[in-house]
Image 1: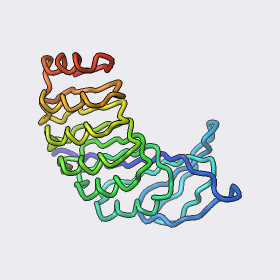
Image 2: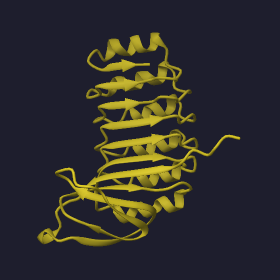
Image 3: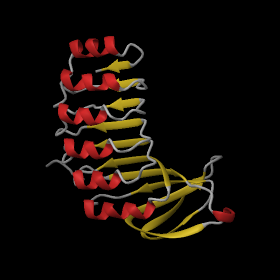
Image 4: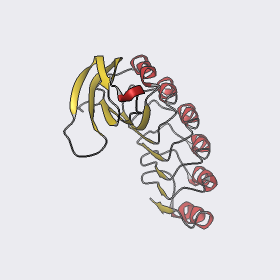
Length: 214
């Protein structure tokens, strides 16, 4: 019998300085573990379980890990963090659907996004992510419903610098060509997709400065 793969969400944030450099206490409804430590230095993480109240301190970063079983409805609680400048978000959940991706897309400051093994996400979900203006790192792996149509949304992420599509088996050479619009892209990985060596070579001719692998 195959075991269920665990689900972990990780939020890494740079917290803005609050008025008078004072700490702020907020309520977080999303279940998980809220960890914080200073932006500078190597201090240990301080952890608090949620749902519950957490303390946002100036000049600190936060890691937020959500355990197995989270749903789109629970993910809607991310709106409580809409005023926090989120740098990186990691999600691996078989329960996540396009509706949950729409909630993620409300966090406009995301720069790095990791979405792996979210088997219910479709091309519609990717269209939500195209609205993130600052995304530069997208690790979108083992999501089998994503097709060449979804690649059109990735082609709109003008600040994208690094991309992995490992295990997105429906993406073909035609979809890969959508990346030719991304002038800042420095790296793209197509392992275990439908993109073959001929497709890589064609894209390489259009993007000679981008490192392409499969």
